[in-house]
Length: 164
Image 1 (cartoon, helix red, strand yellow):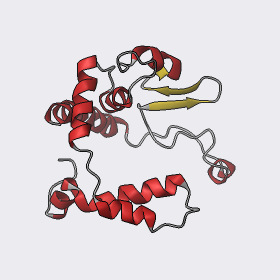
Image 2 (image 1 turned 180 degrees about the vertical axis):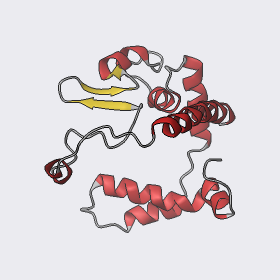
Image 3 (image 1 turned 135 degrees about the vertical axis):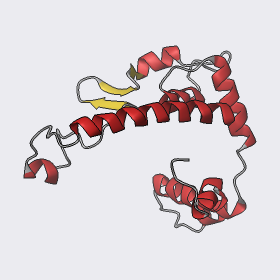
């Protein structure tokens, strides 16, 4: 995981410097007007968060890091003989902002395979839910149950800065 963490940290540090400078120079600038109906009707038409990872446009559809889904289906690495992009490729693009090479995807695949153990208590937690529980709720519960194994959580509780 070292290589991808280092690459992400370098990009995050550079963006952090840009954002600090932008806020220092323009932090008090107003950028628009908001109506009460916009707030109560789902923030329609309001940019509520600056995000460079995706854009949802009513006419064009969703773009990930500037690429449409058909473009990504063409450009992202696929398994040999396959027609669909590997999820590792999209993960790499979203995290680092650039299209991955085949080698980048193979490294992520190997990393994820090494880290794929799911503790038994996570399965027990999911099984304890009612059968009618929505799949996304099951997913969220499982992710939260994995927190007990989190190296980050343990280090953060011991005083590590969340930026680190």
